[in-house]
Image 1 (cartoon, rainbow, N blue to C red):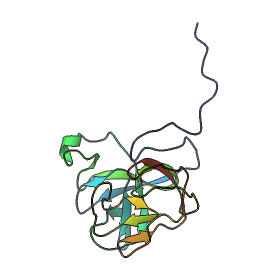
Image 2: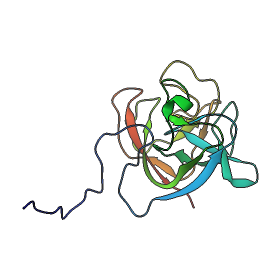
Image 3: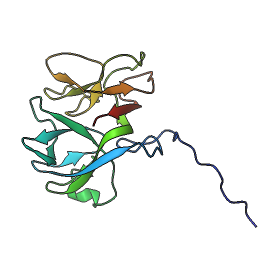
Length: 167
């Protein structure tokens, strides 16, 4: 007879964009619907004015940061955009507001005390995409409130972990 599993890891190994990065009960997600276009996992979500139940992803200007879209197997990926994992327009998704989540970093993360910023304008070459995260504070990015880096990277475009602590 097999021995039952008695312990569960709090930290999960290398994963994919938008996946939860811990098994903590402290994580907090809200269910919200994307209203403007397809939304991609592991990217910034902005609140639709006056409604915390709806979100959009950055499309050219800063907005009120709502959280990061968590990965889901709720839809066939052919309904979104070829080569991108996400949700089609008007589909509900889980937006992480508290906890750890895997994201792709546009910049090398060498100092975990650096600020966390999301790209809202003018993406350049890959890995720069609207809604992705970096340590760069410029006219094309906006600071993420109550967020910190948890894992260093050695190159741009690598997976890293962001910890959010939003109310």
